[in-house]
Length: 340
Ligand SMILES: [Zn+2]
Image 1: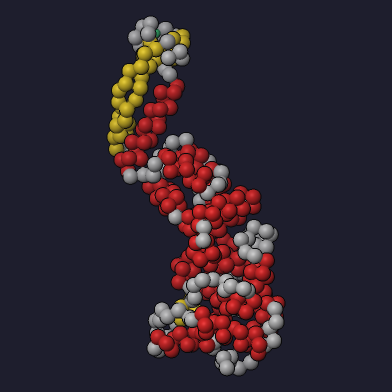
Image 2: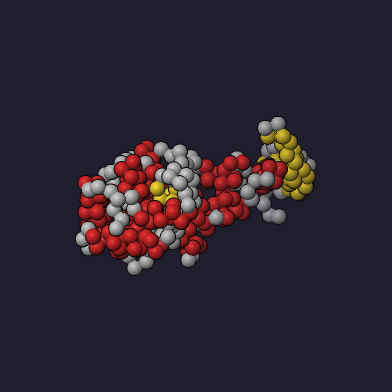
């Protein structure tokens, strides 16, 4: 080894031998043992200071803490930003952490148990990462978002539209509303967007059907996703979703905008009453034999959806998605029910 270490005894840089040993360090009252290397001055035999060994010791210590607590490996910590094509700072912000927290973890600091669990989960489940990306969209630049969005979509492959598209739809409405929206409204708007997609898109917007809950058609995963969230503060400063960063086609975007324009101004209660009058929900309840107000998990049928919304388009002269507003206005000014 040609490198030099600093010897405090000789007070100069010296050549050195390497002695292997171990050390034990306390953290939160727990002792962690780990291997270290020590530089020894060849001239006087005293311990000499060699920075790379200090860094190795630091890493070995963090490694011991990791192993002792079942924490995520450093490899995974370092792989995560590469996997989702995102910088360590934007990633940190996306996760709602301090800007340099992730940088510290990349340098070898052992994460807390909760940070560790999150990293493991995001690493193993691209759709979980995708949801975090959507939620934290406004905390990072549009470029960073788009780059990462592309990367995760490639990982999700064919799974993308099916597994996570529904969260994008919901997020789109939240952004349009700037937070002036409730979880129940998100459900209704998503349902109408999906319903009218049978009329205006080549393929249905979503692959899954809502279920005929007592409160109307409900997507279970959205229910869980939105439960307890403060949408008002979360989306108060949301950017315009049609700024080119959305993953939707132009037709899909138009549909979402038009559905929001048609239904977004009504309260969740009014929208609920409306969906209760529509045949896809009523038929599903009937199929399941559910009494009024009873719990029911029956999905609405795709056939019912296509037939009902096709009928609405005909009856209310809805020729393009921009005309959907006619149905909403008629529904709220005419006596229900609407299914014929
Ligand atoms: Zn010396």
